[in-house]
Image: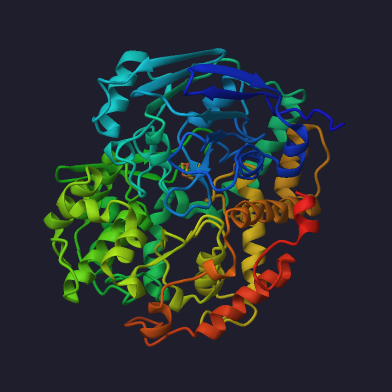
Length: 590
Ligand code: SF4
């Protein structure tokens, strides 16, 4: 039998939304040992709990809030919470990482995982306060924006509660809707807000007062503080506090991977009008998640527009992708999509595609390159499924399958591309294609090696399978530990030492590698069970047909053969067959 490890609460809370009942069960320690926590544990539970082929917006799709062993400890950058479900946008598994304080509060309430099963028959919100779980009518909140709803609830309950809420986009089951927390933190991708909306769950409040017991807290804290000062607060990570992800703007523009005009170009001659120096002029202050230590958030006001952000992705998606040069617009866009509960990446990419559709004379959705007001208006119409906005409400895959323009509909498996141009960083194309939740930069972030670090050449497919694997394995264990992506200098040795300190079980660097590989496999296995194979690991034809315009990668175009070769390299390293499938022997070991 698997031994108990400390730093877990040993408890899974299951909330039956249909019958408004709750029950608890012990955490499956075998799963915890094999998958550690957060991302890996969420996918393993999804694989166990849910039948293949279920409707992502039906009652059989569960919504998982999953912490990790590091959550609630003094370990830096450990305050994230994994939010997972089958995605309505892609049909794959989908795990998102949300910051703020909800993860720590959930752990302190006494739970490693909370599973929302079934669906309510009317708008509701749920309060989790230690052992007490209560169900409440949300008629007065339904129809309100996410920020309005959070304010009403915080005014009533108090700031010692964290609120996870959806906006109108989630209520209207949009495939590009997100979940918000602490106003400005999002579980953004894959329509996770629509899963919560399908349960008629407007909000979840969490308060925890139990804390977390570690047997060797003094020794652990002393060593954690040493690691924090030696490795986390290092020069490598200074940019996180200085600019946050905004720093990527200059790096991506200089490296030729800042996408512009719906992924037609990869540089913006106007980028210095909204770069980091401009951002700092409008920054009111810094914000961070619980247990952070780096504090990437930039709280900004430009004119009437106010938000925490915009992050690099949001800036690129709302600015150069749509030919709009205005930091005020970027901040307003961020504020509006957060408030309406929409994924800022998917929304921007979908609107940029609609702009190109009008430019090419294929269909006019009423939104055109360079027009800020039209852009803000169509986003509101998308959230409420009004007029032409309704045609765009489920993202670029659904819209392009109806209206055409699939060659330049920039998504993989229905998840819109993040803001890294693959023709300037060939590995990113394969990374988007094989990612477990569709196009994602949080899996194998090859742009870092190909462009920022220049440790491998960007414009070739050769050797990229190994790069994809190494980076994917690393992020799989990092996110299963529940560590923030932006602690960039953390490594296997530190993760293994931290886990050993807090769990009382000896973990090695090799174990980190083994768990990372296992997490990649369980994600693929979930999708394989849903019918995904090599034929679904695709990217839009634009990458093979249209040479990139401008910047260091000017004229670059990929070949289908080179792309397929990257997939084959990766499958072979993973031990999957040529069709990208795990053999039965690997499935049996999960
Ligand atoms: S670096 Fe940013 S996202 Fe990461 S934990 Fe800190 S505040 Fe949160």
